[in-house]
Length: 255
Image (cartoon, rainbow, N blue to C red; front, side, top):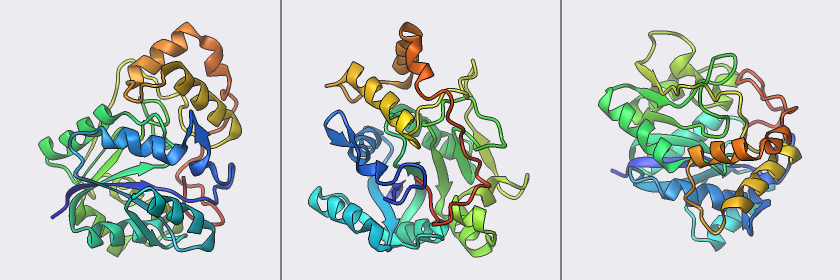
């Protein structure tokens, strides 16, 4: 068994910022920054990039080959199938979903979520549920952990397009269907936006990295401290509207 497999969901055809996953952040493509951060998590046994078989993702697959990063290619529209097939191929018993538009993902928070899934003996643990649900961690620290058994059941039973595009909604959109655990933080920082979906988001993340490099192990609380010292940073992407999991990209997929 692979044990705990981190699957980083990535594609080149983002609807709002095409090609963003390979755009530069402090001298490295965004995807490499995500991999660097995920690789610091102590409870991850293996990392895999999951992209699509669409020709638009050939460049992404080639980048993975050139950088010796494991890459799995599957359906563009049915991301749940892509995840399931990747996890099945790797013989994983637990899957961590990370999207490639979260370059400040916190490895310690990844470990905390994995540990919660194990210790609470649940099917699914996460740092947030997407809108319309509430969240208390900043957008961009999104970690979802599922047992392979729960992923397989979702793969078999999920029918709707939004649920198959966003992978895990079937596990939490009906109370009682699965055992779930959501990590919450007090105070609530759920309105902070540290993901990359637009040019404004990218500029903010570049500024954050500029403040910390050459360090790549900065914690999310250090970013909060930075924002308090430089409140103008928060204004850079304050007008960006976050998407709901009910939104479906016409080309399929996310990240």
